[in-house]
Amino acid sequence: MKVDITTLSDLSKEQIDILFANALEGKKKQKQGILEPKLQGRTVGLVFDKPSTRTRVSFEAAMIQLGGVPMYINTKDTQLIRKEPIEDTARVLSRYLDALVVRTYSQELLNDLARESSIPIVNALTDIYHPCQILSDLLTVIEVKGGYEGVKVAWVGDGNNVAHSWINAASVLGFDLVLACPKEHQPLGWIVEKAQREVKGSIRVISDPKKAVEGADVIYTDVWASMGQESESRVRRTAFQGYTVDQTLVDLAAKDVMVMHCLPAHRGEEISEDVLEGPNSVVWDQAENKMHMHKAILDALIRLWK
Ligand code: CP
Ligand code: NVA
Image (cartoon, rainbow, N blue to C red; front, side, top):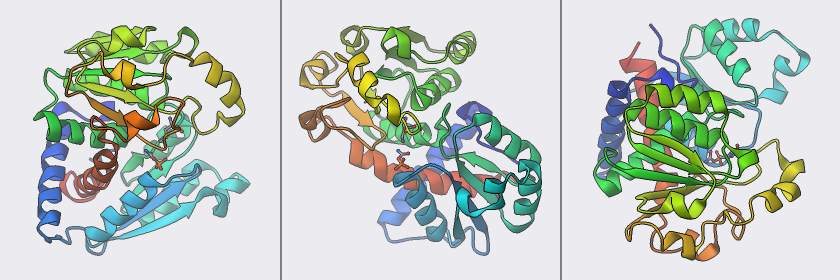
């Protein structure tokens, strides 16, 4: 049966551990100049209706390095814009392609696409989740810390799509996660409650960033206004005062704390320039690892788990 990644919770701990192992192996080989054309003759469609730099380009590069072909499909250029039913689109694209990577607004639309397609569907970000981001971020945690077990992750900022996928990850993999968010911008209650029922580690939502980062191994932040929330930017800048990841906050965490950001970053808002460019920041390695993880994901979904 095909495997979709509509949320990180679609995967078991065992499957995620396989992705980590394969991504690390692929990265090692690539650094030695070895590229294996495991997906020769295969095609992945990248259906995007939000902007993207990293996710789009790293999925395209991943597919090319695997010997396959990525096909970028701007939703505006398809009949979806003229209301062709998602079911019809899913059935037709399933006849041409080996997998679809989709970035869109509605998680429901993505779920419908997964249900109606006979090929794997990968969530490349919706308003609710960003699962591939956290899979590649955890790859960076594994490289730096040697594993994710026993790691304490502190999220500082908006309880958004990226935060939701961290919650799913903590629940499936069992590490400790604490999220510091302003009261009116906390993660969705049902996502937190479901994860807390299933979690092997611990998941807490608080509002004090200083408390959250105490003893943290990872501090993670993201923009205060996500794609689609641009009109709220000014109001949000006020709501998030005190939530900037700056050096004062970083000094409260473990000395070797990893500072992470999925990017794009707004220097001086959710993160200060000196912290983003400072010795604890791993953001550029983190961005690189998206490509290595995406190679592992495409290979698993198109070839290994079919
Ligand atoms: N981190 C991330 O998803 O970046 P893009 O929006 O550039 O793809
Ligand atoms: N939360 C951000 C993540 C960007 C990668 C957004 O949805 O815009």
